[in-house]
Length: 365
Ligand SMILES: *Cc1c(COP(=O)(O)O)cnc(C)c1O
Image (tube, rainbow, N blue to C red; front, side):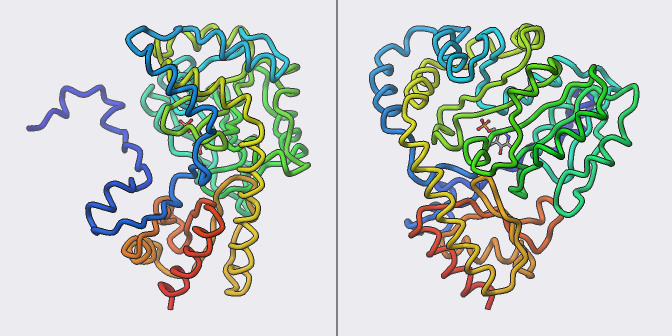
């Protein structure tokens, strides 16, 4: 059956997100049990135990709709960040925030500037609304802000800064962000995707985007509980922005987009600073193990301030991906972003990281 004539024309232009291969699928396909997934930047320590306990309790109440405004959670976040809760919009994961932004702002023909490669969902949302993508290739593996600025025109509505950039893992520094903002008109919305914020702040050069928001209301900061808090499975993320923008974005959000389980888990995770600290510490230890090996092998890699690393193993990533998979290791192959000999590998426990290295070493021989 061909339904192409029925489609909204922008939908025919969409590619569909390619998620990391699920563990269950690999188990079924290959009949192996011991699978290490280093493909989706999940927390190798698991979720906060406090969040799990809170979900167990809340499970008794799932016959009741959640608070559509997620007021208690937003108040807790407001307190944490010292802002007004009216500046916060909850999403069904950060991904929904990335949908709401173009749904709120993009008219057909409006332009959105972003790096190439960067997180794929910016392009999806903008394309869906009939916006035009302006993709700026990385320069020295970083956002090329000079080219971003050259490409701003009267149609520019959005600028996406993925910081740290997925799939590369590195940050744009405070100085670089200042340079960008000096050259962006006030009425262009700048989105800072800070999905890896808690890892990135270990780098003293990481910008303070909340400080930027204070003087630049057309700013949207995205953060999520999926990565450091280990709550990817319950779907909760949020935007920090001006009250004016939050009000408009809230009109297009899924009404009950933050489920009871998500809200309760997020509140508990906010209070589990110890889990976050342990996670971040392990993350950088896992990097040390990987970097040491990459250096021995003379592999080019990008120093990361996220929870994954981008590395050039000098071989077709399709083949490396497949061979690793057969040995129970799931990573993301670089060909997905036209970096054919690169891999994106999430940090794991030290044991998982060592296992990955051991098997990679066999595979590339
Ligand atoms: C993981 C991620 C997100 C959001 O993920 P959710 O699970 O939807 O919260 C947003 N941006 C980037 C760059 C990410 O890597």
